[in-house]
Image 1: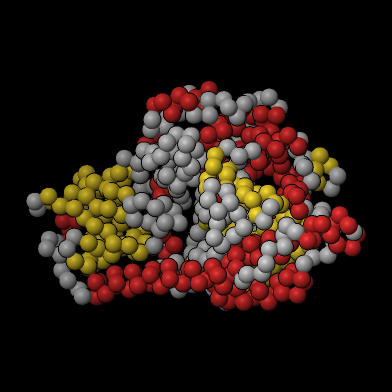
Image 2: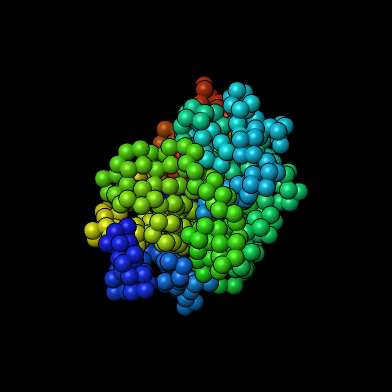
Length: 509
């Protein structure tokens, strides 16, 4: 759900299509396997799958490593991974199809279909359209609200209802802010218009015509499917297996599960203007609608890559790359980071799926393949990314160690632990419950029934917060007091979920 982001060969294609169009660059034939093996070791990635399509053909579709660390089952082209926000283009395509069929307009106001829908700003509520939902231009901050929504037991209807509590940090239709709940809302409009749940409509209209028989719309039951990768993280500690996300309540934003073999079909269809194996799957006009830039994400030239701008369409990013127009998206779920990418002018498509969420190799590999095909001078993208990431990894380890050192001093709070116990509320999230547990405190979360956290006292009014799911993180939690009473606590989760902390006010014992 989270994260993102030509040529002598091109001219040779026109000079001799038979000889050159089907010849992969040397990086793919001579170096790919060794590059991936080294990268997986350096970045601690148990399993990875990669697909490359070029000029209507599948050039690469294979797996590397293992599905589960310490086990022998290998990743192959059929191994399933959570593809998270790569789901979004499927949702955008579905809405664009409905517009093509004149069943709705992307410029229709959301309240036409969901009369009770509201954003924080009443003026934005009256103006917000389906297009606004699908291109992240609501004015909210990236990932805002996701700690409340991600892996929670809230229904899609409740996620949509709580969007009115997301106070924007930017300007409506001016400032880009990645908003998962906007896609959830668009999916519910689709259901209203078609009379089918989002997942059923997309499966019938896109997956089945493409023959994507090993792709699933929801995360439910993923652990029991055969040939599925297990999720891992190195965030806040050593490589560790973590639970599978269940984000079906955010389905239209990021619940799909797939494999590289199936994704080659999606990529080939994108590169053939809506056709697959000669059969028309989607009208070209629908494909075009998804690729029209609706909001500018960045307009500054990159120091690391031959790019100058980035924009967002309907579930897809777009940029220039060494003179070619590139479309892509990344996907981040706990334990998985993935990407899909296609370059129509070069007939090139790429997908990379991994089962370790705290690494940039999945993107470095994508850029390395882009460089190879689009005639960008060689730079070791993985080594460059690693050099930039190592200071961040070091800083995180130091922060976790510093918290442990404060806990190890075994200081005692000025008031009994029972004084901190009680029910605490946040308008957006709801309630949490803090109770005593031995010499520590335990946090339970109303909307996350499988998640708990431990609070170990450090000093002042601060405790170390350690979530039961390692991916949520380890942070200081600070209580505020008034007189002899505990009044509130500030709680943070990993930036992978949401950037800002939540303040919970004590409401009772």
